[in-house]
Length: 104
Image (cartoon, rainbow, N blue to C red; front, side, top):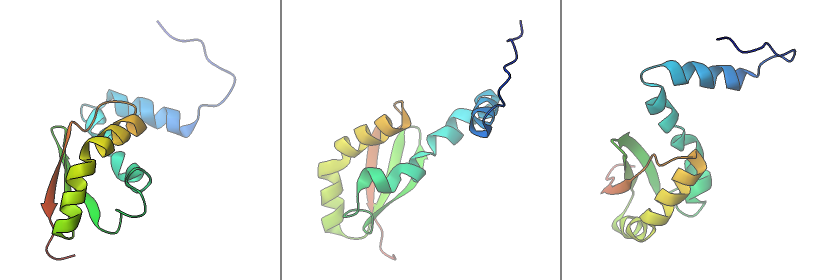
């Protein structure tokens, strides 16, 4: 069954989103949009000291540049997880694991 054609042209973002949804790894690619939203979710105070490393099975690994910032992330990780998921529109991050980054 085909949809009726619209007279308006499709937006490129809509076409790309539909194409990604059909790929087997489409959801994983969409999950990585969190890198785009990282700065706005984390805020100007934390951004110079923490950065996302990788996302694996719902766990976001984050590097902190010192023990103080690791502890700060421990206090904030639930809130940041919830804000990231809200920004992404679904539960992508189920936990945040913080590691110390020695060479930054």
